[in-house]
Image (cartoon, rainbow, N blue to C red; front, side, top):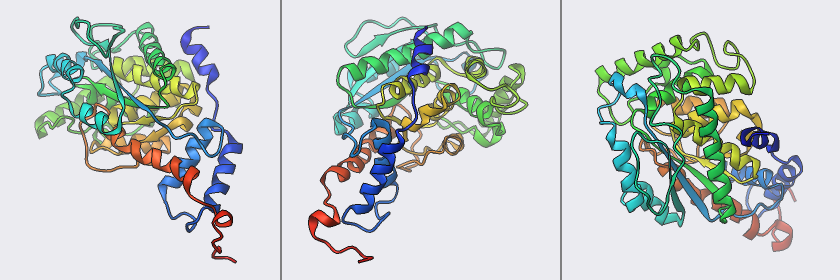
Length: 364
């Protein structure tokens, strides 16, 4: 079996017994039922992932920032030059990005993974080079990747998940860097959900109206030339892992594929993964198409300002924990959500039940 096939075979759904036990435990805690809102569901989800209740507190966390370039940049979909991808990788490694500041705040380790930067990067502490290609082809002219490249990027993400968990991480956070990657994200979201490009394509790093219009048309052209304009990948494009892989290769980015692999790797290891913004959301759609049970192991860290992100989360059935109109990427929203995820688990360990505290329940 290949690494991808083995990983897909190892993914299981949330453990139903642990889920039931966690729900019952929540109802016995000294608080009104449902009083912690979405955090109660997070705690139940964590129990299902770990197959035990109360679930382990998901720390320490590890952030993996997957970096790659995009051939569709040539279509003028971003005002930022492509070399910014390489420059921001250097900034991450130097500790100067917002993601670094947020990672320091929550005590998360930061790993930067070059899966497709259009330049050779010098060795540096914290950098993993698993370069599949020097960027993708232009997805508006044909497939962005070959099937082999998509599998290699998926397996690069799986390898990073395995490595970080092996080093002691008990929660993984997705991060990304790639100029023009919101264009690929919009195309993936259209392909996997069947929504129109105008509904899911956003301003990314802050493009003007003219560029946004061009970006929407580029996404539509990409779907059309790749045979994905007739409906979601699960219907017109066919169902199952092979169809999902074709869709990912056609309009995804190397970092999207690696993040999808990162999600799959976490799910196979029964470790929670906190999704960041629209790039992570679109990658999670690919992961879910490859292995539907992988979604059980995901927590939506936040909902970004990109319109496609809300569409992706709704399709995945995930409720975001934070909504601060973020649109930075890097893993910033996922890192901000990590303390909330830990708090949800800590409640299960430290809050007394009505019986143990001698508190009379409402129904009594």
